[in-house]
Amino acid sequence: MTDPAQPPPARLVHGPGPHESGTPVSDLVDRLRGGERRAIATAVTELERMSAAAPALLAAMQPHLGHARVVGFTGPPGAGKSTLVNAVIAHARGVGRRVGVIAVDPSSPVSGGAILGDRIRMTAALDDDGVFVRSLASRGYLGGLSPAAVRVIDALDAAAFDLILLETVGTGQSEIDIAEVADVRVVVSAPGLGDDIQAMKSGLLEIADILVVNKGDRPGAEQALHQLISAVSIRATVRHDIPVLKTTATSGDGVERLYAAIGAVGDRVMADPPMIRRRRRARYLIARAAADLVAKRIKDGQGKRLEALSDQVLAGAITPGDAAKMLIAEP
Figure (cartoon, rainbow, N blue to C red):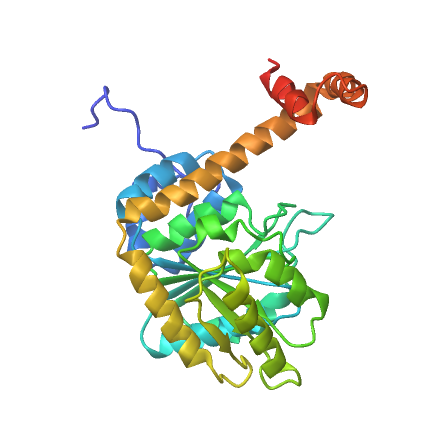
């Protein structure tokens, strides 16, 4: 008999199929914990959409979070990140690890969904129940990620995946959000990218735990490797113990060393309590939500106010920083 004083259990209302509709969130989490792929896919979809059931789902997963290692792959376009992630998946599966993959792709300007071109390179995930891959749209976020990616990390963590590999959209040095989200940050480059190497040195280098020159069988690979080694040694803002490795993802050369380096960095990070690592991701979500609220306020009703403040800045009456504070403070 149901206690009338107790609220009814939260239920999913936006599941991908009729069999999921009306499923209690607690049942979904139990099935997800058991590794049921349909339950994992449903949870990921609910959290990606931030559906009405998503807050209850996030709350129900909380006791099961903090055990997976989140490894972020970022770097300039053309570095072969997807192919390298595929090689890491294959190696991880070879040693018995369950792997979740979140691949953040550019957004379609029409539908807003992910453009899935790079996912065809992740052949190691085909027909393997120990691998789960989900592509997410960047939704225009310039840091290479979207808040949906962090929510999906929680779903894969709750599903007891050992490794969660997070590949960013590949826009270059702006992709620093991964520093707040991943436990281990792998920055990937390749020979022949020209100015992108220089951009990486001035941006992504500071967030790297591991640096990789991929496509190591191409001309210029050794030169690119030495450039990065030199950059690490002379930049005061960069730790000098960062491994700088060369890989050829298509053949698997160097992937074992990369996997070992990921494990070594991960061992150090995982020595911290899970709450410390998860707090970084919570800070990221709060900061993103705050930025979105400010942008929405400007779009929805602060246009005239913004114009007036702009005129005051141009007249030298106030600074841009003061104008921003005044705009945010407006009811």
